Image 1 (cartoon, one colour):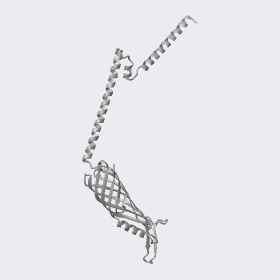
Image 2: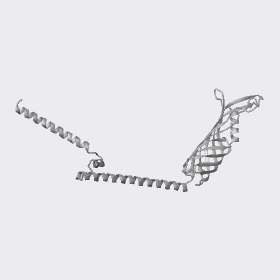
Image 3: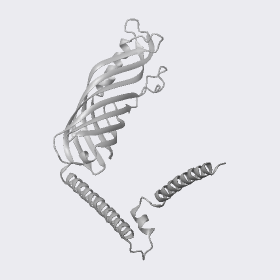
Image 4: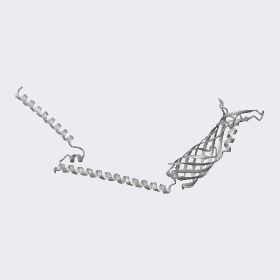
Length: 276
């Protein structure tokens, strides 16, 4: 190897070593300087009075001050929100009836009429308007074909949807109501043919639809809901069929079914429940 080639190789090696040193130095610098100003300030000796150390300490104090201001602002906003919520709650408690503050209620009812006990779910959608769904039953017994006692279970089941309009803004307020109901029951009668004096035992099912109107008063106290009302049912459809394969309509069953519902079209209902 000539002297010229040897010097050329040494020069190349020196350039590569310098580049490697610069890369290593840059990497070390980035790695050692943290993003947190307070971490950078702690990296200096407490006795270090250099400009870099003082600048790092000022940056740390500024960050701590900003964090304290942010925390104070968050506490102030939370306090203001709590104060507004408390004011709204106080205003509602002093000016709004209980049915508005606690608009949803689950109630039980008992009384007379097409159904004499059941369950009600209601919702006060407006200050003076309540909508409700109601399921109820009335225990009934079927005719006994032997004539020796009561027959089987022919209990009525009723589904009703309706609304109440309150005539006042107080917790104790009168109301008017209206709704639609559908009723069904098993049927059984002993039918005597007037032409030949013979009789037969008929079994089947009855269905009916009705419109209802009501009037009453309601009392709402905190989470408690009480009401009493008079109800009138107006039949708009009655139908009955026998328990045969064809489900044959039967006028005798229908007539007994309609007469039974007509007898119970007037009723008084008492409701009590929990509102939330």
